Image (cartoon, rainbow, N blue to C red):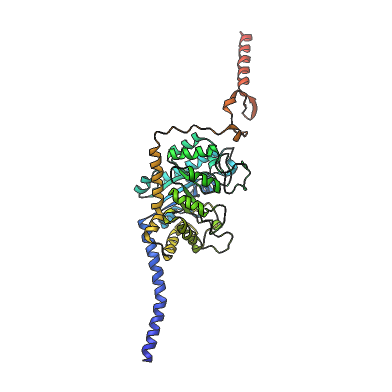
Length: 422
């Protein structure tokens, strides 16, 4: 009897060692299988910014398949089961009122060249394009309203170039929208929420079929945009304010409004906005944000926007784009079902994108937006006032001159020289 008891005890101890390993292996296998069937659509990656910083956008100098200076390369994207990636087109706030449009165009150019140069990638511009792609679908999002230089025409040209979302602000106010981080820069400090022109930007984005991205916007900007947009909106890389009270995160009342709008928040992996200064930030920390948003707005309101290569610090276990399965494994462990996770991985975003396209299709009869921002709201030395162009001082070869009178003077002098020579 004693011998049988001892055997049973050893068997129990052996099973105790094996069962957790078997359970963990089962969870990992479930996560991998789920992601193989429903490849991730990630809402935000700043890899293009790193290409400018390290290589000045000279793609001929780098192999993107195995680049090791960044959180992102093509091999890691494949290992992370990424099916579609929004590449962030971002230019520094310090370019506002200077050459932000030129720099934005250069970043669009490098994304398009990258996606056309590698067989693993494919540039797409529609929800159906994502579904049909058998490669990593590339989409373009502009991060920061300062990139349009307060011009609806510029916004439309970006759309024609393939841009499918605009983040209304970055860490600086624009003349028409307030940032959640407005204290970092001193641009337009008196702007609150969305101005009248800012509301016109939202309406024109609805008409075009461009996703409205509210990450980085102030509480007031986000609330106003949500109230006037006819299409669902996104937060491309934000998290829950109730878990970490960082200004970049989204408050519960805004999450409820987002649910009503049928938009999504694509939860970011940026450790600084996940843990509010705590030194230990891990996958569990991130999963807490998912759980909270699910409780407030439902799993159908959630996506993923890693923000890789846009910040320096990520949770332990999520150091680069190959690590996405670890998050799905943790959510499975917490009781999320596979239908909810398929939504988080891609179906929720596809639903939003399709509805944005539907609103565009229903807006065919709308007039093109021709509103202009009041000149007094954008006065700066780099902006020409075409309503008073004859009095504008211009520069030629670095020397100031008054363009119209100078041209007339040059013409008269030429006539006098010809008269005397004859």
